[in-house]
Length: 136
Image (cartoon, rainbow, N blue to C red; front, side, top):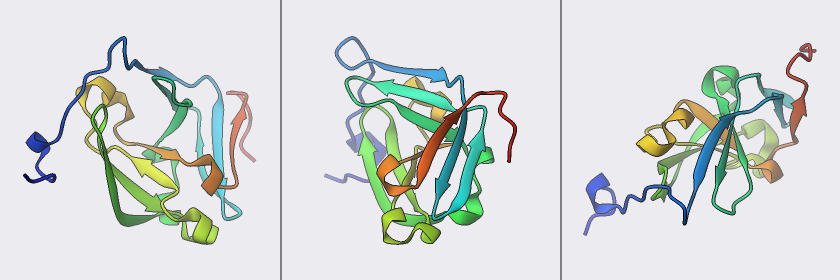
C-alpha cells in the first residue's frame, strides 16, 4: 500500500473530539533566527488544535524566503495534510527544519495555505508586539 498517494492517507475532519480553530492574530509578529530578521507581519494567524499549544502562522509574503532553505523532510497530518520543511542556515544546526508549511492544506484549515510556522526552540525569538508598533 503506497503512502505517497493522497487517497491512501487517512483524512480526518476537525470536530468536538479534535477541534481546530484559526483566527487572525491581533499583534505584530516578528521572528528572528541566526541574528537576522526572518519575518515581520501584522497578518499572522493563530491555529489552535485540540490540546496542543497554539501555533502562529506567518504569511509567506512577510517572510524573508532568501534566509530559508527547503529540506527533503516531510510529515503528514490527517487533519491538515502534507507538511514541508525549511531550514534557516544562518541559525546553524539549531535552524535545521525550523520552519514548516502546509502548501496544499485540507479544506478545514485552508486559511494556513501560503503561511509558515516556526519551532520556537529552533529560532532566536517570536516576538509579539502591538499591532501599531513601528518597524525598526
